[in-house]
Length: 174
Image (cartoon, rainbow, N blue to C red; front, side):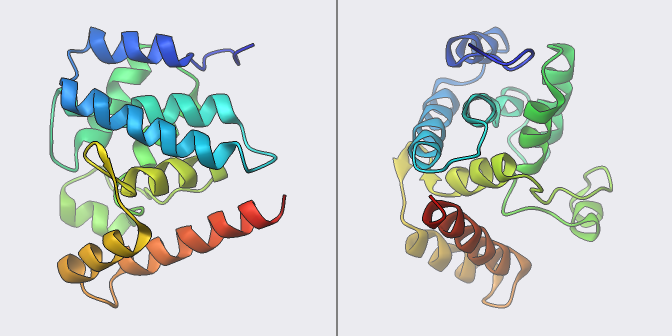
């Protein structure tokens, strides 16, 4: 049974199609969902329906914008769809490894905190980073990419390490 306002995987596919989400983006969303589900199957005390919906819909904003602002476009779309605010929050906070208020201002996003704050938000953000388009990447491959792009001491690299540590703790506490 699905939670109220949390769409099933099939309903998510229909929402993605309704907004003409490109096929390659849908394929990516399916991979992020697959990775997320694998984690969920090993973690107790996580809302799997919420994670699946968030993973399926995290990039719906790419039907409008392919920049970092796709998260904000996704929020607008899903608010119109009247979805559970927790699904919308996953979409808002999945970008990068989380974005601080200061970074948001520099990137032209509404100035607020985009750091994942729940287990479900964190899991979708982390799974998204492990999905390179429609192919899986290892933590090490993404870490190397982030270091090259942002520098070893960057917020992105530090948060990626932190996400991995938190997920490993969730996995080992079962």
